Image 1 (cartoon, one colour):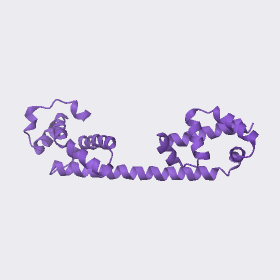
Image 2: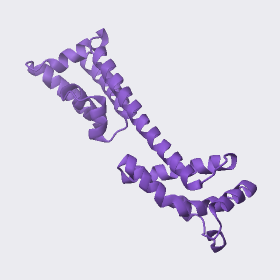
Image 3: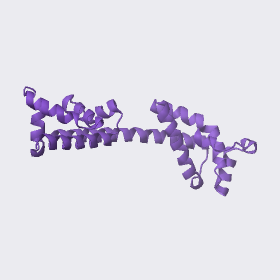
Image 4: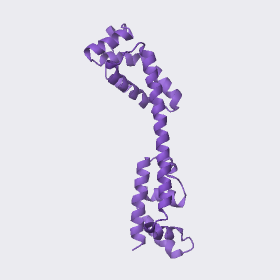
Length: 199
């Protein structure tokens, strides 16, 4: 792990018990003692993370999060068994990650619902009317010309949302954009289209 590699592993510390290393860290605040603990438990933490998260890169990131928590809290926590303590932190961080994903999914759903509802507002009526005018050649041409003036990422999000009926969540998965980016791109694109099409 990158954090661990910043430190040279001292032979002197390899023979210290976990408890001795914890005590030395509390007394001196030197991170080299925690680095030794990292070396001992980093593989275990990674295996636990992979079990819960099922993704290699996400698990690597979570390993770093776990040991950042260790650095932050070890000096003020009474740890009976370091292995058990770090296991608990890892499990909790995995649960926290899943809760964050669920919250994000709920927000995406809310954003999509609000956007759908807002389609009935007065400010969007003309834009939506043009988008839905499938049999009007002039309207279709005007719309295509307006779409062609948009930035690529704006046009992609508009296409997926309005024409392909994808949700914000689906667009984020398809494009790789963050949820906030999807929301922002659709809003900007919609405003630009409305200005061009309703002059």
